[in-house]
Image (cartoon, rainbow over all chains, first blue to last red; front, side):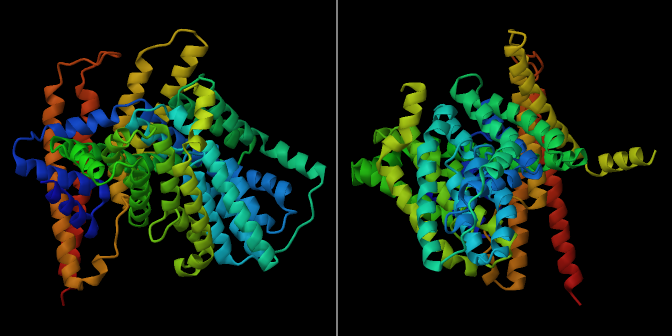
Length: 426
Length: 163
């Protein structure tokens, strides 16, 4: 039965069905053929999986992100990063990485990070004589790194799936996120020296002050969101709602770049993004229910345990699974499908679930960048109008750096756990 | 007068978009109100959390219907291009019919479930659970409409392409 379920899903996806509907349809056919699974459970599962307060953070983070993306915040943050690091050789490369870190502390979506930063930095880099393909590659890689930096929508989803605190997942992403950013910077530096990229004049203190003042309202946002969550003032969902209201006020009344007539479109677009994730969550829970009635996760866990009892091997297998899957499936879909199957195994192998989550998020970050379906790569190519085939060459070293950092995150749990244990004393 | 007319026209043409947009705004307002009620009035209400959850179920599923129409549901296209044009058409039609059948099943079972829970009251607002549960069948009915439109389009294209 399980084999039939997976063959059906594979067939439906291969023939262009949306992943969410493929999961649902295959599960219902399997349930129907088994005969003893009443179909009224389908709407029941869809409803109960979505009726959750933590998941409410998803539409709110999406909305906050799009207010700021349209509201001119990206440009201010790029300006700030620019005055801080432009005097280093390959400066604009660092500007991309640093401003993506700033922006992703506000937004919960890596695609939005790549869009907001890329739309400002890619044209600027091309103007200054950087190759368009290199500019595209560094924006895409930075977007992948941003998956780790809190807040993140995939962090919200994982927290809900694994029943761990979203705050702990957010806190856990800091060190690995900065580590990955550092890795990207180091490679950029050596590449820039080799290629002899232009160096710009160091910014004066006055310039730094102006850029800082301009972006201060945007910089306050991570203080409010992350500070509020970590200090226990709000839940992640409440913080997201505060972020929407604050982002709206900053974009409309302070930067004045978001026009009121743009609001309906932003609301509807955010609803569509939420719907994409929502339907996946709902139908994946139907899929999970059919799997569980077959005791598939437990049986699979036994199988893997019988092959090797080593946590080391298990984590390696999970990484390989996500890296290959990330090439072919949308990262959010991959998360929603695989985590329910992997969680029982992770528990049996004694992996800390916060560490496991950070490791998976790092994998998805790489998945955002791997062709053919990496979303950040798509966004970056869309901005620079470069074909994928041109971007692969400059992108490859960045992917190697990211996978290298992923290995650190996988085998040094301390990196993921040090901040949560400081904050939550776990 | 003219803006009002434009507004009514867009309401009539894009009712699902309007509902989704309003739901998004409402969710923000309700969760924000919950924070305010806790910190400003020192008296948390218990209904906003429940209301926000129910609104989220609605927006997640209606938004999914919109996403389906916009083709935002990510899918892999590499494999299908290796088949002949005629073969592609047959596969597309077949997949659409299978998905339509699935969506129809969820719609029917969803209505049955929403009716079944009409006597249950939600713990916070004490409204019949039918209201939140209706999100499933109504959103799937909208999806069904979109997918049937696609099927009609597919058949028309095939008919028109014949000499």
